Length: 262
Length: 262
DNA sequence: GAGGCATACTCGTATAGACGAGTGGGCAAG
DNA sequence: CTTGCCCACTCGTCTATACGAGTATGCCTC
Image 1: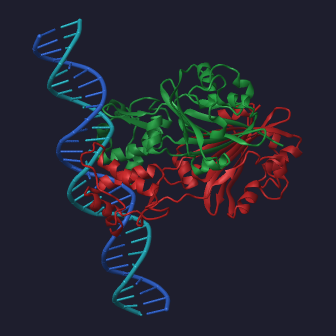
Image 2: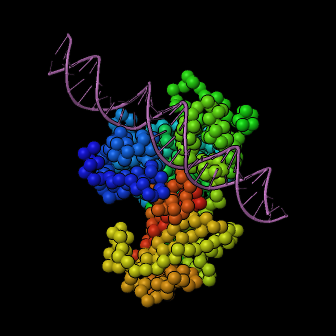
Image 3: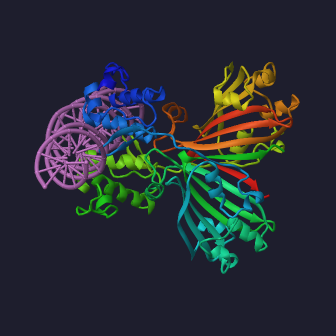
């Protein structure tokens, strides 16, 4: 209440035809944008906002739900509503699969995370053979079955990315690629050892709101979209040797690409 | 009502500890996923859902608001709630700025849209000199002032993208780049004519929920994120000659990139 | 037939109240 | 001092009700 009377939030405009709950959302949003509520700070409680604006609680909750869907705030049961802190961002450079980055014992994810001062983890590792979904199948040249490698990546305990790699079964069966730990340099190193020298990767980038399963898997708070990245690896023969389907928490990533001008 | 009694939606599980509005959202989501409600189809009205599930209207609205924030449905005042149709998607290929695509009289956007059978439009064109924001300034080598070119792109009347190009003022002032219409091949063709042969582009891709201003500008329905793309163009001297800040409706785009493996 | 109006249906906004459940601090008992 | 409980405060869920505003339809009038 002290925070309110100190003038962080003003009054409603009864002459405006803008809905009351939008006016409240506007005021709180502006206060956040201008830094009057700082990152991680607790907003006034619903009861305080009810009293300050003289409206019912549902109206206040309606206003807060707007800000939540915009990704500006997140609520914690029993504690309050907080300005959502911006997490550190992981930058994926366009040369991240270059051969020269592939000669270490650790995975690219691990190396990069440790360099950035974060604690990397990989879990939910599942390796199995399965019948590919139509879109995956089409990219791989319609194999009857594929090897699927599923894993989840975490930084400092927070899940940031979920990825599934699909490889034609005739190519991967019986090799170290079919093992939970594919060895130093990852599956791309193994593919090259098997004679599939990699030529290039195609990546398709989309953004959308997460499914409930993805919300759970990535522990996403509301108002955070996901980036969907589908990468296809081609060998020098022009054969698609792997498709990797990745879903990333959008607030944890920036993708960097370099395009030639010619 | 006939649709409901025909069994598209089932009953609630009173023994479940899952909130009622979530159960309702789950059921409707599943019906959409399984195609029992098709794209563009009208859902049962709130009143029908109230009757079917035997709950209050706020509970139904709460359930629908979940689906709306997931981008699955959108409501239209006075008409109903509809399964959101997936709009046609525009694919941005990684060679879209290649010199060979730059020799026509029309802009790349126009050519590509017409090839895809859509009606392209460009509006809100504004060209002015201004003081650059810090992040833009840093990318361009800290010029005191820049030329800013703002425009909005539409496909079949729907706004899909809003873009601002920034160029160092000393480079653009007095040239055709400072004109509303930059001429055939766009500003990249003009830059090359001015002796700045383009070498490569850096692109940074992010996804997030839109600001209210972006919702208005792109006429976004709720539950649709935006893709933010910041492209920096470098000439063969290594100088950054342009920064383009683009905000795209995420449901209208897929970005395609090709990465070398070496 | 054309125009306009009434009406019924849709979602949008807002109120008031109730109870549940998670959190944290203080107080009392051991 | 430590343990455990209670309580106050937080957000979560749900009900019931009311009126406003946009849309579509059909009927009535002209």
